Length: 109
Image 1: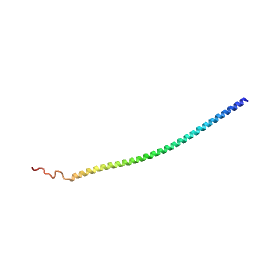
Image 2: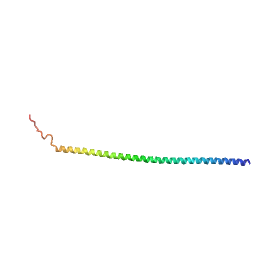
Image 3: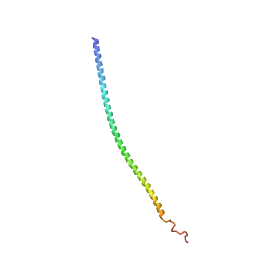
């Protein structure tokens, strides 16, 4: 009779241990699911932040491209103005009478 009682007690202890282990595994599974959900939410937030940063970067790149275009136009305008000024000086020099043409070679005393 004692053996049957010991066997029943051992089976009951084993059942309680198995139930405690199953409860611990459920808690681990719940914690893992919560961590997975938190990581998914963090990934979504980081994805949104990255998209916003990409949008801001694209806006800055567009502004830089516009500014670079304006600089290039200004540089080209300066080159054209310099060439026009040189051309005008050359034309003026060509059309103007020589400075010595009106003066006599010999001066009277």
